Length: 122
Image (cartoon, rainbow, N blue to C red; front, side, top):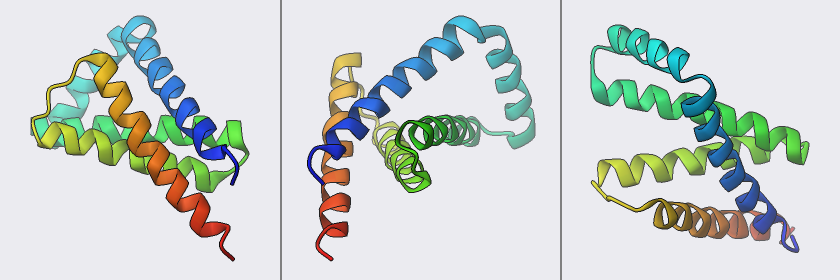
């Protein structure tokens, strides 16, 4: 296991920042049009937000899978990231950007420590 969990959490944090910068700075107009199309399709703000989180999870899955050459790490990383986002949105937790990043980093680290240590118990 060593510190693979740490590298995964760091890559997830970088992936999240890259995703935000790409979507808000590069593809902003496309992002707004896509949001309008999704909203018309799902007819609900909460469903639209869940679709957004699912698309973000796909992005993280692709990045993690490529960086670590592991589809399992990609799927698990994207899943835990999405669960954390869903939890703090549904709970109404308002966090400043640094606290938001720390929340993700700590929970994702603990998650991968548990997953990787259980896998190495063999």
